[in-house]
Image 1: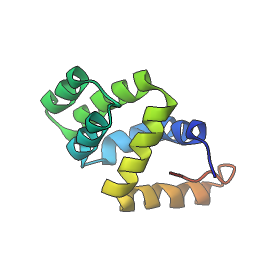
Image 2: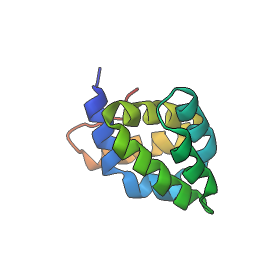
Image 3: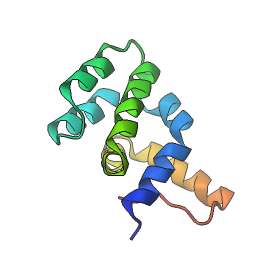
Image 4: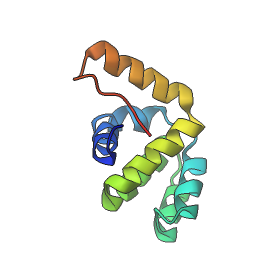
Length: 105
């Protein structure tokens, strides 16, 4: 089983792809707020952003300040909300043979 440190590293490494490709930003933010992983002010900043990409940039600010546990939780929620995106990233990681890294939850 992979660690939350490994999951956090994967989130960080694929930041630009995630910003461009995640479309279910608000459901992810809703769940992070409900689990106490982000503060209401950060949630408001995410909600106020105009595009999904801007929302993801705001979300990444929260992920960065929250540390590895929040990034790992984000990855779990992302897997539930956008499984095809995570599978696609997993496939490209395997094809790139990046030390056998895989997304884990």
